[in-house]
Length: 198
Length: 369
Image (cartoon, rainbow over all chains, first blue to last red; front, side):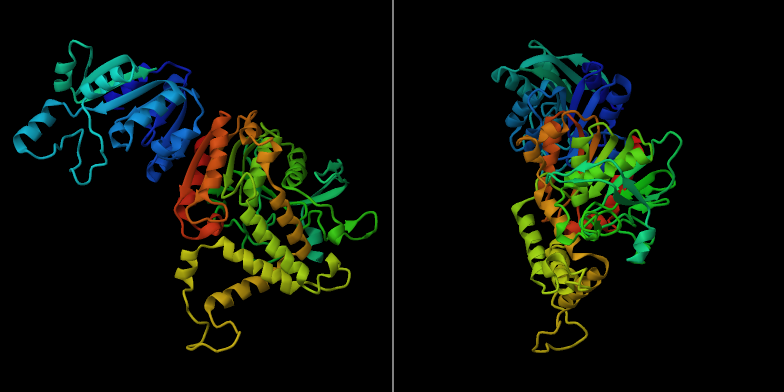
């Protein structure tokens, strides 16, 4: 399991109820279910991935976070997970609102557009950055609203969302993000992992 | 009808109070089984048939000599593997394949019921079939599934018996029969009743048969089971065994010939009064109303794990209506999965060889067993 999922699963307490939005092939859900006795539900847009989840015995609903989150009642989960997909929504602000409606806590991970390799790419090449974390060209990327981890950090302050935990990931190395080091972390991290609540 | 006397059936002694207020007792429920019930009795699957189906899910139907209606899905080494699972299917009450229905003898008059048979509902059908669990001494089913009216029975079963099945798969169905679907059913019924051979439902006693009315009902219904795209691709404006239009009312077009054929073979295997009764049961189905406008209440007490399946081109029981069920299950905190299968074959998709659909059921049943 990739490092990002390890960190997410460490943020989730045993015996809780979790909704994984954009759960992919269900790797994280399966781990949470088997290792932490978590009652999991997944929402996934790709039919192929839905089939992968069914084969793993996971509870999976085919759907799109922007259209289908409304079906879940208020606070029906302990946690909701959104891994590296916030930037692909038409209205990320509304999605965050909805996440914090259906669950007490949300874990959101952000591919960092402020990462130094991304900046150098744009600075030196003058073309839209293509990196391991952002593998698509500008014309076929699903990403509509790229942001840096500093952008997301500021967004939470502005919207009065409590940043319970902020973790930076660079390769396999993790570190905490805080007010003092945010500019450094925004330069040195590929991914930001945030545990937020209202 | 002699061949039908050899069908497997249980005679239910326990009186069944029907929704219409009448009570039936000592009534037959005809059934068929596939595979073997294991010692733990935890591998049983109850399949519910749709409007014109019967208990012969797979293999060769001994009455019609045709393949069972779910032959693609159920059988040895198929998606529902009968080497592993024990599949039970019963003919619904009101039907015409051995369970009590309008063709049965009314114990009071000693004559064929005809339209004196009481009006039955999906709830009555499910309650009648529940007796099979007691007959086979099955404490808890592994799964229940069905498409269309079969899916309605799945929903009703869980509402009535919240913890009698581990999993449930309602397919291409609805929790509340729509105005459009009631309208199509009414068209079929009026067609039967307009046939002069119908005789207020007494045709059997007079050795008559309202074949024309029943065939037209089937033709109209058959169109609703397909999609515009599917029809266009299969038939287009192709002519039937001719190069030019006939300038008559013969079946010039292949689609006309096809529908006429579908109508004509249907009357050989189905009873017109049963068609009236079963379509009525579908029209009366409104699980939302049964639970005072809150469908999630229907599933409040259940631990059953659901998986709901719809098809992209199904306009009779569209994805939106299937999703209403998903939403209600989520609201009640039940365990539910959902997928919409790509198919241009319309509502009929659930009966066809659609690999993605078959794979979904196989994977769901295997992974949760």
